[in-house]
Image (cartoon, rainbow, N blue to C red; front, side):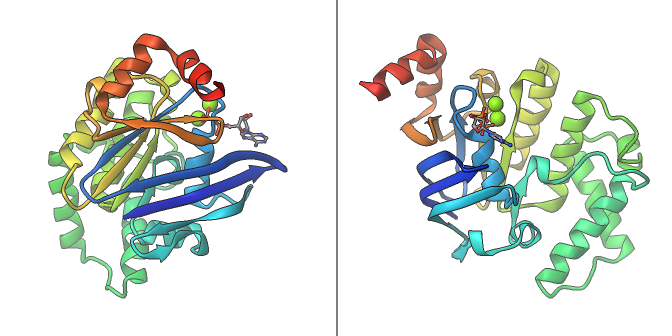
Length: 250
Ligand code: ADP
Ligand code: MG
Ligand code: MG
């Protein structure tokens, strides 16, 4: 589904990604961990197609297509979801209208007509139930000052509605309390299927107490320096990132 080969990327002439390799297959959940400043958010931004980042080498294939050749909105239409790509605060736009537009755009890209009002409402109802989303939030304006937990609920509801093939969640953990973590974890666990995949970017092991990943990778200094199963996350928690730093420089 996702095949990243020797990806190198810079921002403001500073090289951040230094030859990153990663393969994700349908049905898999991958966790990417690593110390602050190692390039985790940069990886997510490059995959999203944010223009400030310059890709200097390597290639990325997504579902058989050259991802780096696609505009950010085309990447979304192809089924790539990045949590921060969908702003939760848009003045004057309700959550539901935002989703209606996003789904119409994706369908248009695929040559499909928009959903009828009835089909759309059916989808909303079905997904609200699936991820236990409060109907009150559905109709609220996107600029109405969501709390941290509500933002996470909303993110999971967007995921459920848009049904991407690959979702990348950069959790910026520091701001997440345990309730928000559980919202994210329950949502991901509900939405995991043999047809989709998740990449969870996380600094701490905490999130992985609720979501059991198939693979754990350590990103350090712009590269994936170690890959393993969920035990690797526990080992990291125990030994700290200095253990990785020492092992890489040795
Ligand atoms: P992580 O998410 O792993 O904490 P980031 O990808 O955010 O790491 O950052 C990796 C490196 O890129 C850091 O050294 C950071 O200072 C640098 N960086 C990130 N954004 C910018 C920017 N806009 N301008 C210059 N340097 C940046
Ligand atoms: Mg950081
Ligand atoms: Mg980050």
